[in-house]
Figure 1 (cartoon, rainbow, N blue to C red):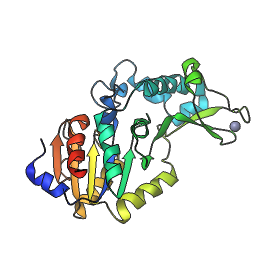
Figure 2 (cartoon, rainbow, N blue to C red):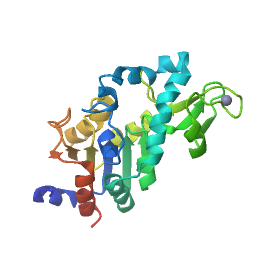
Figure 3 (tube, rainbow, N blue to C red):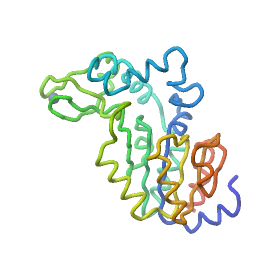
Figure 4 (cartoon, helix red, strand yellow):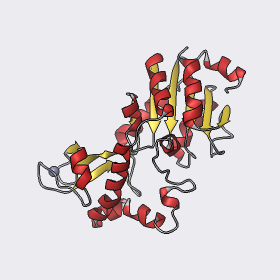
Length: 251
Ligand SMILES: [Zn+2]
């Protein structure tokens, strides 16, 4: 249950920014990355997985990168949005301004109905040709067979996942959207959910909002890098707490 004074504060909210991470998708069965039991935490394979998902490996041995990406993509298409994803889509429908910044590459926010999504790390199903820059999306049929780097239908070049790999820069156009949405005029409410906020560009928007007198809420089972900075640090899951926040914002 949300505290009464938080429920009261939420009633004045007209605009909202949400920031999400792997914890939101964990409840859909998508393995987390950095947390305990996460993909990169695996003692046998974790470091190899990080290495496979790096920009230098992609350029040297794209088949190795795609071997891992294909498995992540298959898990994404098999997963379904959970109540945390659905709550954020419901809030977007009810408020005049809503923006969602996600680190997740599984496409589940869009699958749940979210529209104004900045997927800062890209989407594991999207592709970009390393030769001609053509963009595309993996079909379920192509995905079933996929184990090596696919070829571009336009030029025959090698496709890459249109996602940010380790050692690569964030896409400038998405950084600009994030800047406009969270810094130029911070939303009334910023909620950060399901992320340890280890990346500064994920932590800073909610810290900025708090410093500028906005209502800020963190939803996470464990304390994180932003727990001390936010107005409300709530211990729990996104699937449990985001629907409660949505109920107040949409009532
Ligand atoms: Zn091409």
